[in-house]
Length: 344
Image 1: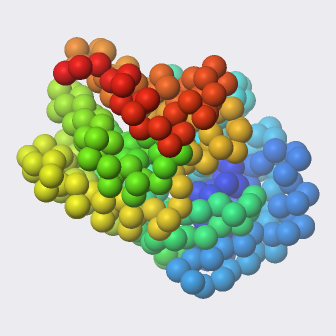
Image 2: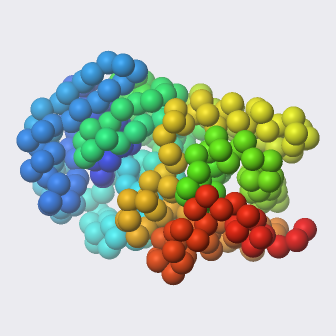
């Protein structure tokens, strides 16, 4: 009998991971909101992976975590946006004794600690996905670039799921240092993300402008300084040479590194706007900027490392998300954003 997985969220990552496991015959249940269940069950899951179409009719879905009292799961895969974590913590804490281990695929570097404080460190497995997955609708995704996923080798079940995930084509790799895994992914998530949302420009446009590239470069240098001070070395992730990225940021002159980053940012996103831009322009009223750039700021304050660019991105994008400033104030106006940066 195959593993039994509970996928917390049928967004881009949840659909991709859960659907891939389901195609291999494993029991997969999706936990989604009531208003999304009927459409999800009637339409099914649709996945375009590397040009091949897959469909899973009538996936099994539930709308309440309370059902874990009756159904035994081997692993929960947490695939919600990071800003939804606070909403699900009460249920996780209340049902702690029924919980299997949780593979946390959320962006940022703080979710695992928050989860551990509520349900215990023994149930939390840090992880991430590096494949580029685009959500076209609920339960409907396209994998733009196959890379893989990573998980910490900090729980016995990590070794058990390794062959299962790889048989499903997910290219899972295990890492002995969870902090390096999560911070390395954070570093890649920052690239062309906040600036693109604030300025309404593509990442390629951001990296083509010398002044904006300089801002991006400073953002990454701040993050690497925070990592270095905390003793967290970057590690390569599946399909992503993060160690090389770090070396380029640290040592290569900016005029030489810009073409490298421009090529990487263009090929990595495949023309898709980054997540911060999508959230802002969809009017969701939420953004992961505080969990990404904001996390760098908070870590920097604890160890006395200045992070002015990350702080600027967090402050400005949060103000746009909350409607405190109009989007048009910065859209296509790099000079307005650049004028806010403190002098070195």
